[in-house]
Length: 388
Image (cartoon, rainbow, N blue to C red; front, side):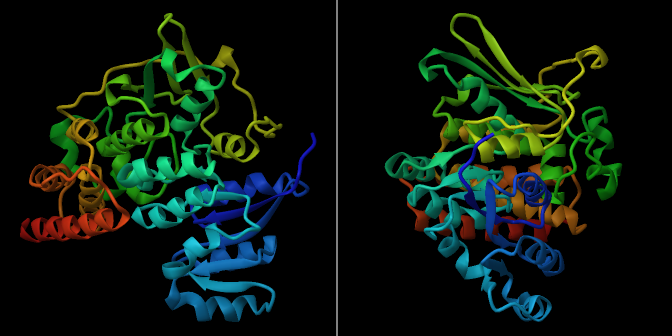
């Protein structure tokens, strides 16, 4: 294996994707150098990571800067604030690869800046592509930036399309495990605890994305994400329930051929591919044993049971500012659910109400997206406050 050492910035290094990215990088010390790590709240873990990988830059929430400085006590590490410095980090000349492992809308500006700067971008963040995917992809096309997705489904689609022409594409099959509630009757949803909802059968993820997986809103976001990343009409993207989570997604072509990407349910696989593309290196992980897989099953999603997915598909067909509204309302509703303010079934009701009352605007700017995001969050919070 030959490689030129590449310098990596990880936005969100203390979350599950960030931690797994560092695990991958640690296997190839001659090929990668960590130049920047960021987190919002977990300054203790960030400090441990900084001591181990010795980056030039770290960034943390402003209220934790002093604590981080005292623990690191290193003049060679520059400590920045995530609230104002993420965009600055992404455009540094000595950053080759930007791994966007942070969740939520706050990834939008650094993602867009990295795209404008022509970086190699490995995103595990859906929200930025959902709310401003058109702007990000336009910036990518202009600068020559390269986006290699980290999410297992988008990575699978990307891999299946390699060597093929998008004009020959017939359908993308976006697989979904079904989340924690796939086998739970809808009438029992509100009887479940928050812990029940967060008990994902296949993946260990953050709380927000796990709730979105339970409502299937996460899969709706992935439809919007695929629509942006691969420049396809939403009608060419089908969601398929695949509880075993072995087939990470499939692509069919107009001649009837179907290509699928299969692999172990381990995020280190798509992370490593995004970092080493176009090469494939030994991951050190076990390969699939097809003789032990048993059945692989597929089914259509039940949109009556999981209306968030149907709503997301509706939003994808309309576009404009509506995806921004969908994301903003969902973030507020999920946060309210996790705080015990609303029931699980009320997540959809809040999001649907905000989406249906929004007046869509088609020509997007960054300021417009930010303004709409702020306005619709206030609307969602007002609806949540009225729920008893």
